[in-house]
Length: 438
Image 1 (cartoon, rainbow, N blue to C red):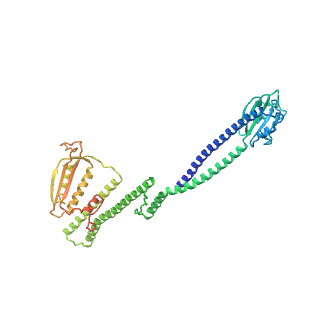
Image 2: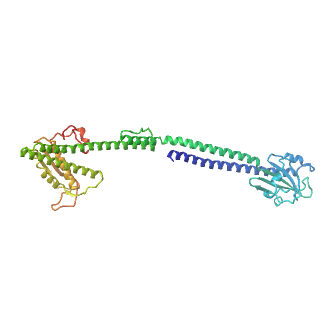
Image 3: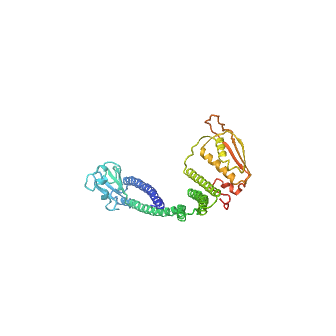
């Protein structure tokens, strides 16, 4: 089930639950109000009927009095205390019989002994059926000079129940319509709210199909979670595009770097095969070129391995290193390459740092190799190593465990780096001049 369908479904379920609770409260409130109203009106009717019976001017006939109390949902009756019906209103035929019997504690029919409910005045309620109030009318009551009679007023719930039934149908129909409307509106609102996510899905699929990270999501001027998600998605695409471009350039540059020494080796080997009569000095020079290119290939492969280790998150084997001794060893090993340049070593202070000695050696070799390669013959190369204070410790003659920070400077009088190329100097295999021979 999709998120949009789930949202629409839950919108409908929640609204239906709210409508049912609200409708139930309304129905219960109206039902209670109608019951209280019927109870109060029946009591008032019984009191008024009993009082009218006491003060009736003509005791021989009570028909006018009974007709005066006729009502659509009530009836009145006069009982003798032995349960004999002396008179009753003629409206609502069968109402007495319907409300008589044990289910209503009896309005006894003529000739039956009065039920216990008629023995005393009071108010009797039969849930969901009706109400009855009994009032004694003592002599003289115009009907009997020696014994009291009972004035009984009965009200029933039929007309009010019709109103409740109609209200129930209205509430049920309204609940159904509200639920359907909630599902439809929830579907439409969820579709509008999830439209940016649909755009993200389409963009992601287009990127996967085209292998291009140049596409972007349209970011509307909205500051909700979806707007921030779209902006973050575009930032991720920009980062992926940059990483993909860097990877592509790295592969191209690395391939070129590896192809150049391989082409040199292949050319020299073919020359040796074709020119078997070359003088020995020339043959030695060719073999020396081949050895140089092989060493260069070894350095490139080692650099690629170091990059692969760094990309995989492999930690460096850091320990306290005497950086001045590393600088001295590298300068000694590269003295032949620097023979055509003027080397100046300044402030070679004894410094101990925390690092990987092999990686530090490779870094210094790269810096010096660049200085030699791009400095004209006779140019000056200056190397400086100074402690950074505070926190840097000078190592003791027999070694110390402390480690700090230092500044290593390799400076030359070569061609330099242009301002537009400076931001890229730490990119892998980056060349400032793409057209320059490798």
